Length: 281
Figure 1 (tube, one colour):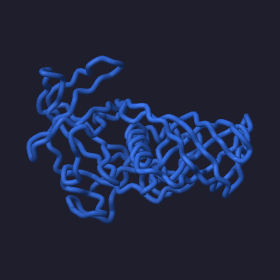
Figure 2 (spheres, rainbow, N blue to C red):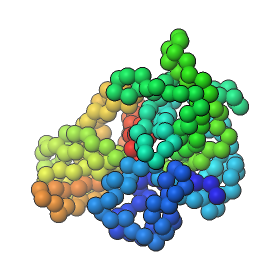
Figure 3 (tube, rainbow, N blue to C red):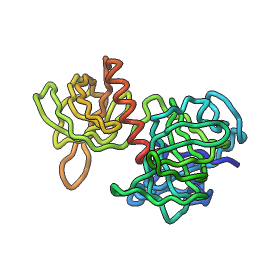
Figure 4 (cartoon, rainbow, N blue to C red):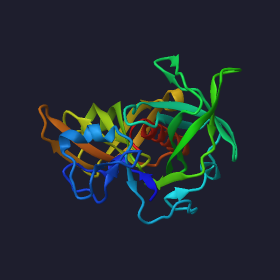
C-alpha cells in the first residue's frame, strides 16, 4: 500500500493517532491508537513521517488524489526548490537544491547539494528521498543518482520519478517559523515572535497581551524566501488570545491577515512553502 507524507499539523501530542505513523521505509514508529507524549513531539516532527494511504490506489491520477503519476504534470519548473534526503534511517539531514530542468521519462536535473558551504560528495547510484511543493500539493518520491557533473557547474541527473506520493495541503497550511515582529495595536507599540505563519494568518507569542479578540493590529517583519529580504507590513484581526502556563509569562495570539495585496500574498506563500520544505511537511 502506498505511503503519503504526514504534515506536522496532523499530529497532536497526547492524542491517539488515527493511523500508524511510519518512516520513509514504511517502518511503524507509532501504531494507530497510540499517543505521542508532549516531551517527544518536537523530536518526532523532525523526522520524515508517512502513513499508509488506505483510500487511493497507486498511480491514480486526479486533482485531489493522494498519488500522482508525475510531478511535472503539476508544473514543477526550473528554479523551483526541492529537498534531497539520503534514504537511510541514520541520516535525516536534508539538502535544499534547485531544479535545473527535466526530460521525461529520463531524468531530472538539479543543482548539487552543499553542506556547511562545501560541495557534498554524491556517488552515482545513490538513493535519495525527494520532497517538494507543487501548487497545493506536498510531494514525496524516491529517486537515484544517474550521473554527477561538475562542469559548467556542479549538478546531478536524477532518475525521473514514476511513483509520486502527493498530499494536498490546506489553503492556509502553516509552517513553523521564528520571526521577530513589531506590533502596532490598540494598546500601542510592542513586539513579539511569530511562531508559525501561513497565507491566512500567524501565531504570535509575546510577554503580554497586545490586543483583545476582534481588534485590529498592524504587523511589520522581514521574511527571506530564496535569499531575498522582503519587508512585510500587514493588517490583521485578532482571532484568539490565550495565556500560556510557562516558566516566563507568555501570551499566544492568533491573527488573521486581512486585505492582503497580491505581492504580499505571493511573498507569504513563498516563505511558508520554503519553511515547510525545511521542517514540516
